[in-house]
Image 1: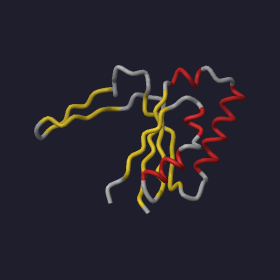
Image 2 (image 1 turned 60 degrees about the vertical axis):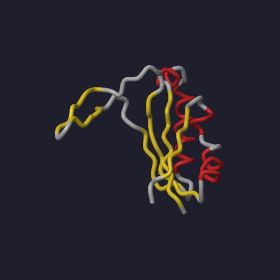
Image 3 (image 1 turned 90 degrees about the vertical axis):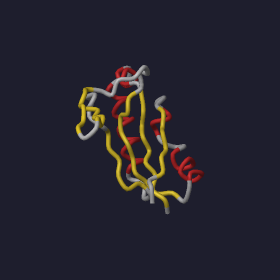
Image 4 (image 1 turned 45 degrees about the vertical axis):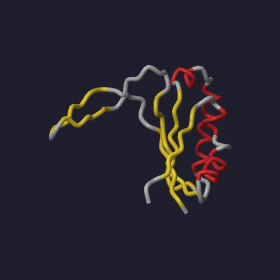
Length: 111
């Protein structure tokens, strides 16, 4: 089986529109998806912009960010197994992140 990284992108402003009850239901749906047998791990990222490091010769430049033109940010990830991209897409199709208007990026890990 191949391993896939599922990256969850969304506009944080969309989550602010949910009532506390709706947010609790969303958290439960994400938790239920994470407990599926093919999922190896999954985590939400902290609500900060993080750091970006860029190599410059033998040193690195560190900045706040990532800053981009879009409103979407990387909000979390899952690591799971699937036979190929077709199966990975099928598995991901039922993820609640899509229900809440987010974008999912699938990437196969190098084997």
